[in-house]
Image (tube, rainbow, N blue to C red; front, side):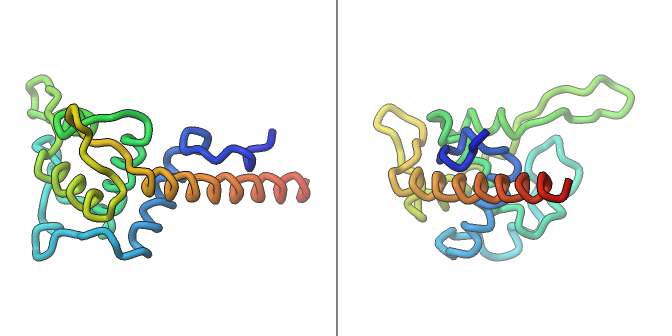
Length: 157
């Protein structure tokens, strides 16, 4: 199975791609992270009890949203459903709650400023050609890394 020939985000593991693309976003410095104390104390939804533990959560969320936009055109409302979860209500039954609209908007605005996504004429956001090219490049690097690791494991056995 030759994974290296494929250069698409759909062909690699989503967790490894998201981690690699978030590192890319952090290294390039093009992503505009909201300043101040906002990013340190915000909750990612009403269903969450604490703020994110990872200090680079913003880059990870933006990378995840960019990957989702690679697959389909969506807007803020759809992202709130994607990043929602169950709100625990003690002894009462849990219910689904949507994610934070503010975080979704800020991430989309940052990705737009970095020219990775753009607004679609009929609503929602879509990946730009630059964003698609960057994501395909990162996906190919992740696929090559996985292929090298698989070769090394076969050689060790």
